[in-house]
Structure formats: C-alpha cells, structure tokens
Image 1: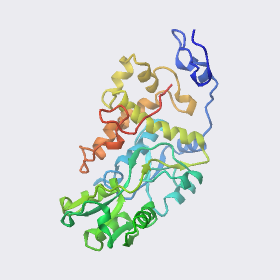
Image 2: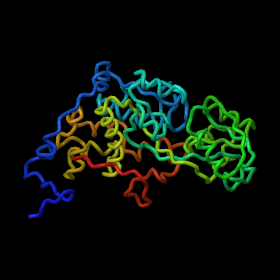
Image 3: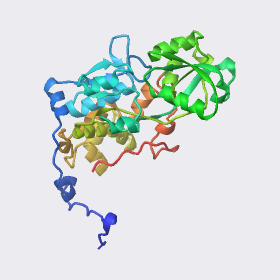
Image 4: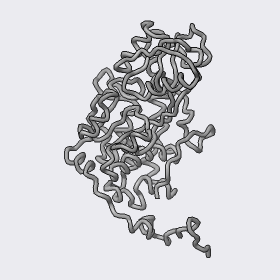
Length: 351
C-alpha cells in the first residue's frame, strides 16, 4: 500500500460501481450560491458585453446576429447555465465604458479582448480563464519594408484611447530611446480608418486586433504585421469579483471548450460519445457519471451542452479566427499543451 505523504498523498479510486461523486474529497464540497446565476436564470438570458465590431471576435452579421470568438465564449456560458447557447443578449461596449458596464450590473459578463493585468485583478474584477493568448504588435504598409518596430523611430503611430496599448507603446519606445508621435483615436474603427487614410505611419494594438483590422481594409495584402511583439496580453472573459461561484461557472465553461478538443470531441460527435464512450474523463465532462455539475449549481450535462451547441475550442477557433475565417490566424500559443506544436492552453481535469 502506498504511504500518504503531504502533497504526494494519493486518493484511492472509488470502489467498483461508484462514481467520482463518492470520493470523500468531493462529498465535502457543497454548491455555492451565485447571485449572478440566480439573476440570469430568473430573467432567462445571459447579458454579455462585447466589442461593437472586431472581425473574428465580435461583430453583428448581415442578419443582425452576433458572431465571433468572444461571442462564442458568451454562448458557452449560456449553454452551461441555461442549456441554450442562444439565450444571450449582447451589449456593445467601448473600451472606455466596458468596466463600468460590468461593475454597474448592466452586463453579467464581459467578453471583449480585455487583458488580465495585476491592477485589474487586484481591483473589483475577476478573470476566470485565459481564452486567447495575445500580444501587442504593429501594422504598417508593406511598401515601408520594415523589419522591426525599432525602425519606427520618429513615426506617427495610431493607437486607441482607453487601452493598455497606449501605455505599452510609451514604455517600449522610452526603454529604447526612440521617439514617436501618438495619434490617439476613440475607437478601434477610428484608428483603423485614420491609419488607412494615411493619418499615421503605423497602427498598434493586439496582434489579433491588427489581423482583424487588416481583413477589413481595401487592400489587406498591402499591409503587414511586424514580427515585433512588445507585450503579453492574456485575454479572456471578465466578471465582477463579488461572486466567486459565478467566476467558477465562467471558468469551467471556457475550460469545457478546451477539454472538448483535448478529448477529441466535436459538436457533431459529442452525442455519440456521451452514449458510447467508456473513457471516465469523457463521461465526467459530459455528465454521464460523477454528477459534478450541481457543485456549481449546474445540471449534470452542462459540459455536454457547451460542446454540443458551441463546439470544442478548435472548432470555435477555426471558424472565427483560423483557416475557416478571413483572418486565417495560426494557433501558435493558443494551441493545446498536448498539440504536435504545443501551445499554452492546459485545462484542469474535470474530476
């Protein structure tokens, strides 16, 4: 018999015929009350704040419906808590008012290219999970033939007001003794238009936002994203800090997408997997055994609903940002830890 020793202590497997819910470590856990969850269920829909228009991430289509990677994060939460990924009402939020909308209760969740930083986390905000690993870069015309951002010394650089990009830009140029003139715009769209009309020499924002902006330009091939990345920008949904149970719900809704990919599930195969799979990891995620959902006030099949209605993470990425989209971004850091070319996504186990 193995001896128990501090962190090396091993929890024995449940006896035959029992599930993970029989584990003593699981039995002591009780469902935590979530005022946000109660409010969402009472009104029958999730209120989610998104970017007013960022191709690939959040934008209204020609029928008025919302689409994009950040939109799908909202839909995943709705599928988990309401069993209906379509039960979401979207609120377009500008960078300057996004946090006020969340803290003031106008929205239940903010899913809008927002970076997890020390100051924000230490304040009144919680960041349940990183959904997309990004970094700040620079977009310039191909005709300039720039190799790095350091060649922008003395340039006019477009940047959006009310974002970390302003501070990152200033810090990068100051640390290298370089000069620049900031051309500050009130929105991403305004910054893009100013850049495209020649009002500045380069446009700086998160690389994903630059790819989005380039896809909307008159001649996308005339512009290049420079290889220089000047910051770390872990992006993901944001919630209020006063409801830890809601933070957990949003966290595991995002992780369900990643675990779906890790376990090779898709929106098309998940129903069959629920019926046929003997893999305990699959069965716990899909609610066949373990009955873990109620620990967060959710139904047992919460993970199944997320994957069935929204897809696994690779499906979400492909259709919005990857090869199935105009952006055609590579997975890069946003690949799973277990991928042939490993990335940073490492979802914790459901057990």
